[in-house]
Image (cartoon, rainbow, N blue to C red; front, side, top):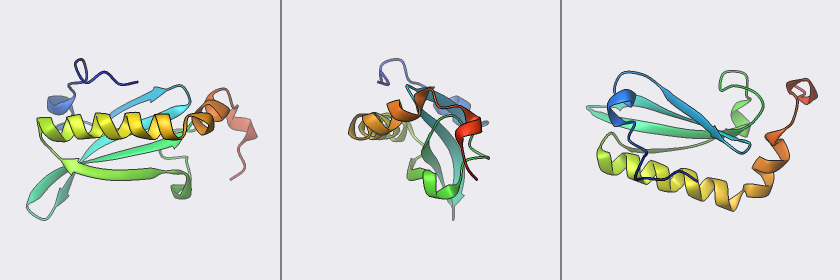
Length: 102
């Protein structure tokens, strides 16, 4: 689980993508423009492949404002994704990339 008390990537996200993984679930937080507004696009996908190699149909995304509150919403959403799909993530946790069919 992501502990919001220690999850403070806002300044990092303003300049770079922020990625991580948690027991089979990979995630990426990326700044994007929506008109005049900056948002954080949060995406999760199963291990073992990286973001660029994972088919789009295996990714789930949402957007939040590029603010401290948005980062908290992102952490809540990531934790929710992990908890509600825990069996799926754990099933993929130790999967070899050679087991993936593209």
